Figure 1: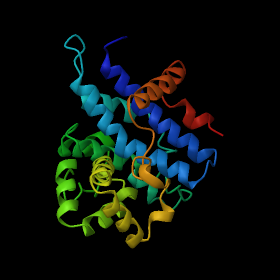
Figure 2 (figure 1 turned 60 degrees about the vertical axis):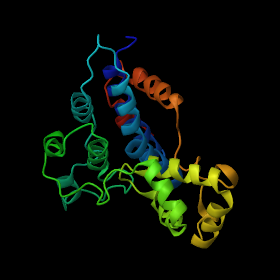
Figure 3 (figure 1 turned 90 degrees about the vertical axis):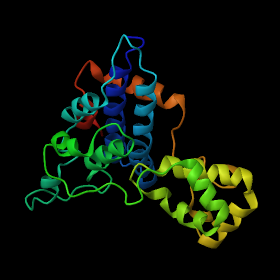
Length: 241
């Protein structure tokens, strides 16, 4: 229903898990799986924040309810619980699906969607994970740090592979620094030895570090989820291949 952002958020979460599972089970490659995992952990919480901010008074938005409902629909065989990951009787799990549920919950907590005290109840088990030691990154702060200390650019570039919920701010900051001082960021890329390994080269190297982005991400999530909603919230986890 138009304006029901809570339902859209639920579909977005389920679809994002399903897309990652399909990428892994179809052996689409490490780069694709890594990108989909980063999208789920680093981008989806930001989209949930946007959906919460634009929710209609007619349709109240409860982020914790959406996340809890979504996690109940996720196949723990595809995305194992912490206890299952340490079960000697279980086959070794894929590094792209291990701990995803925990990483996602902590990323949502980082962005204020759920309180940290609720994470264990959402996961249904004790977790030893913690929030990033530096807290939530803010783009403007990172830009100031990079301008005052160019070496900070190198450390941020290395953080593009992190799965902690902060990569969105890192991408935005590096893009802004590249716009303000493109030569500075170019030299930092060369110095860090990461220029050739980043997914794209040229002026859009940072902007392409985590895709998909923008409003089309919401549309994609809704479309995939709605196609699956008539079957089972996590049907793709069983039928992928």
